[in-house]
Image (tube, rainbow, N blue to C red; front, side, top):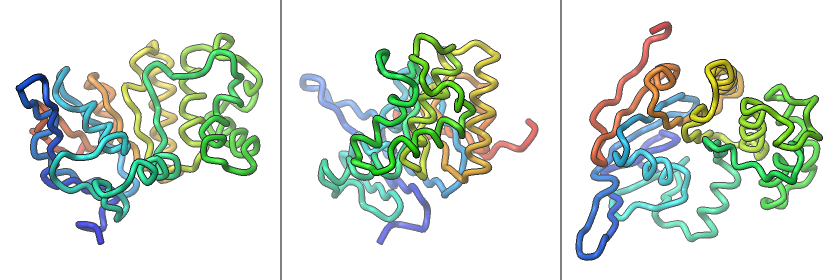
Length: 233
């Protein structure tokens, strides 16, 4: 049994790293609950621990101490294989630099996680994901034939291809101009509202953070502010 009915629940989570004889706490007693369907932004200065927290939420890392439950699963007790299974089935990742393979078409890039997960009907699922992000007419295009905003849409489609319940977006608009940024944020908002996907977005831009429904600010590995954002502010 998990700690609560929350989709994500961290309690007193610490992540310690040893640098020579010095021990550094990248996360230092983090308490965090995220409900299914929330849209939350994570902000903080460089070195604050927000990337470590994102890796933790994405099951790329496990706590040194503390408890982390994801949809009722005690993540700290899972094997590498168990962590990989959760990543592939529950979590979609969106990156600042898109992380598309240059020699693959948009469709082939979106199919990749389905190949790794040995999913049937890969092409159909990938096409549906590309349609969902408005790129049904760009399926045969290579990344170099797409704008930055379109490449990020492919990245989002790839994240959606496995039908995840959680979308983790790490600075998703960091490489985009203002027009493409607006398009991508509207898309993420729409996915959260219409598909009920839980969105956790890391950003250093206040304007982007305020598009979420809740904002968490982290400094020196600790959450120092956790506030709900009123609509229209």
